[in-house]
Length: 57
Image 1 (spheres, helix red, strand yellow):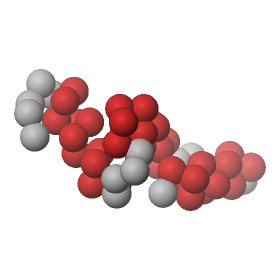
Image 2 (cartoon, one colour):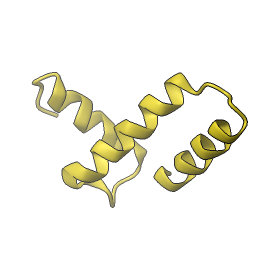
Image 3 (cartoon, one colour):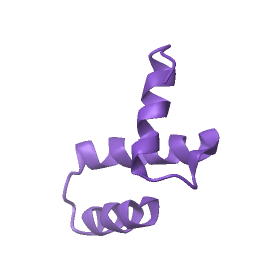
């Protein structure tokens, strides 16, 4: 999914289309992968968000 988000963001930049929320989602996926959840599906981002909020999942 991260690769797809990168392609979408690149296309948006080339067309000068703002992707405010898309950029946040892309960064969240980067953080998810960096946190060791790269082999899990996109719902692993919940673990990252919970961690940032100080919650245990």
